[in-house]
Length: 115
Image 1 (spheres, rainbow, N blue to C red):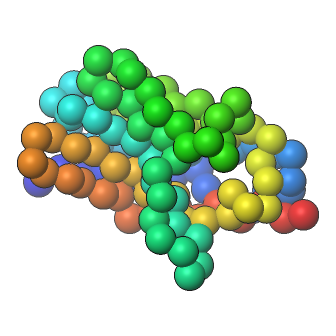
Image 2 (image 1 turned 180 degrees about the vertical axis):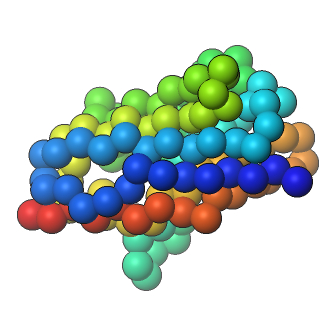
């Protein structure tokens, strides 16, 4: 059973930065893709950033140039560096990992950006 544990969320002022971490219970090299999604109250869950096993990345238009996804294979960890945060970035952020037909999700971490 794969477990994904997020950390790093919190309250930050607009313009500030946060780094989210997602630690997997096993080697992340086994995943076809990993990424971060977010869900604001009353909204659908949306893709924020994703990286494939080959290293290709995809970002939501709203975060391009501000967020960066990265991996540390030695630590089985995926990061989301978030800079120049805006109030509209406020949401619960979920770590995602995909391996063939299986999807795995973390429990989520709250990010709140005050204006």
